[in-house]
Image (cartoon, rainbow, N blue to C red; front, side, top):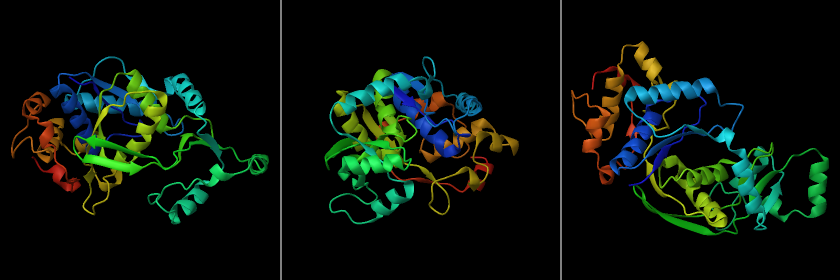
Length: 307
């Protein structure tokens, strides 16, 4: 029995790829007899909207996906994250970073020994006190980074198997003072009692960072299952610009929610042609060990054809 969660960002409607991940998160939790939670990761006040929260909850409920307890919002939990940041600061591994996004891209694109491609090479870690004062005098507001010292972290994923990566120095607080996702997600999963995280495999690369944060905060991390994404015909991550891929768009062209669920079920090998299973049917058929390991390549036009 394991408590799970689905934690979307309320920045727009969920597309069928998001809904597929939501379905899998629900199936993992419910198949273990565990609780399933809903959390909105709305740290970015510039893009998160209450109306998107309402739309996302409606779409999940329309598919038959329920959740336990009250919905949690990260925007209500900043005090928890600031407590965690104070604990991290006490480890003497936090330093201010004044790099612009362009400077970070340029620095990350250069070779840096053992660091993985795209890793932050620690540019601001080496600044003297005088250099920091000059940057602050120029008006640059620093983000805060956690010094990782090139440490490696390993975990065994229920879908991907063993995953190991070196951790680069990563942001724990943005320049505007907003706590970073890597801290917030660790704190939230711990305080909510989340024991298994099911999410898209595009987030697998950030897990070693979260494991380091959890270790420094004395938190027992959850287990992980990173599931394949939905990709478009070109092999790129599915996006709303690819066509009618949201529940609202599909409903507008006559596609019923039961058909959407049937398409999702077929993509997971849980139903056959002509079937319109309910989530209860899928729960009876679900085997976590049989989750597909390859992405779902989707032609949005296929959603317009009865499954």
